[in-house]
Length: 275
Image 1 (cartoon, rainbow, N blue to C red):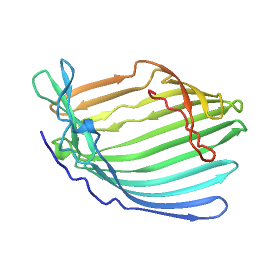
Image 2: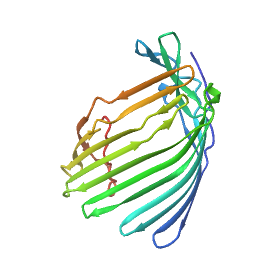
Image 3: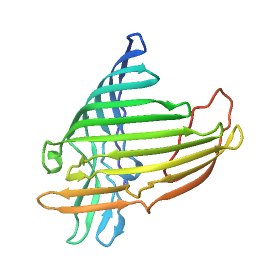
Image 4: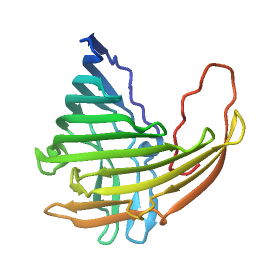
């Protein structure tokens, strides 16, 4: 099977920034963004998951294009950095999972392009220090989202209000020992056939500097065993609930080696996924 799709496009971006003085800044931006399919999203061959479900890609999948407008304000006060960004986005060809029965007992899930989607919201963030060795980062996003799946034969112009949040607390116990606890939450999100339910996770990280270039890293992901992907399908012809979890709490031990010339390296942070 052969298939060809031309993805050549222009994606302009414009960023404007004005210094308001006294550690205050105002930012305006417009960008046309693209999200291209992953290779497995284009692979048309079936992958059998179990006796009742299978998954396949879609070689005709188009990349998602988004027009994004943003206005942001940032200030620094009492050792903290505070920022607020309001945004509006309009997307075409958004990529979404679609499930249909291909036999009386087998449900096939593949990727399709939504007709269009719009969203708007406000992102708030704060970062700073609680003490000389303790710092924090907080962010939240409250948004309105509307999708139109009429081109796929589903309900048109469904909308919802959602929110996400992230928080981390860092502790530099010594010049060589660094600890982090982080948490994230994602609220309900719309899909073409239903919705994805909220999910959350808490992670721990520890880094010990062994030499100037070598560090030992220990991470524990999903400490409270709460991370899961739950999807609800609710259409006139199909009702289903799907839940996918990690295999409980997961701990990783690794060595990190920094090499190459240059100045002071940026803190790489922690990777709470698989190494």
